[in-house]
Length: 247
Image 1 (tube, one colour):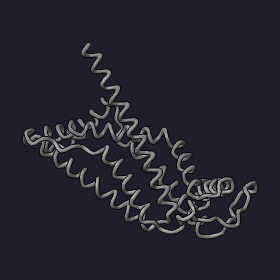
Image 2: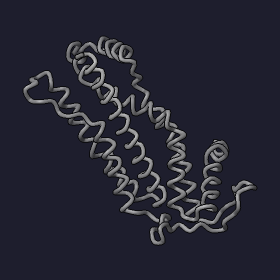
Image 3: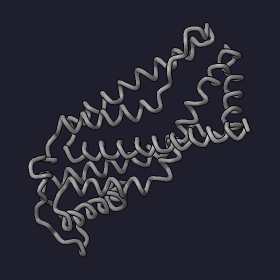
Image 4: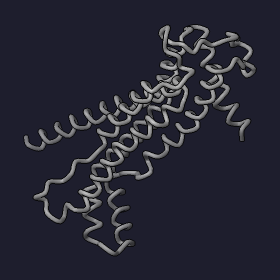
């Protein structure tokens, strides 16, 4: 299993990293390029994941109505929920696949950056990739990406917060009555996750090499920008449909 992981992910990423460094001798710029390349490769899956998360968020009020209507009948709730997903063409697991695919890439990149920025072991280089003998972990002349960075960890947490904020649901108005009670609880849970995940990101980011935290920040930021673009496009399309119906 380790050999497969090394052959399929670690070695190609390591060689790509070193090859780019030979051309652009700045690790920060190399990490930026790798982030963009990985995001482009995963774009179709990321798009699917964002769409699924948004669809699930939009359907949450209807889901709460089903739970209230069939309270105590778990089988009926499950049937109606699946029926609602089918009618709205929503895959509840659509947001999980990209995360599962990105996890091994993230782990491989962790070992790549750890090896490239803290050691001089280039034994896994392909024959056509020049051996730089040493990679300088300093970017922009003063930022050491081989060491942990509180600043980058905070940036990564802030990007995580912005991304989650776009997905968060607002608390229902009080005048909605008892029917809004469950929805209010869901909104409260979403709010707790909104702050917990960025906090966790900062804590973990402070323990990682700065290069990996930089990748985490850039990757989350680009995904958040893609998310914002998709939401704006969807809102624009919905407005156009409403205008056509009114005319």
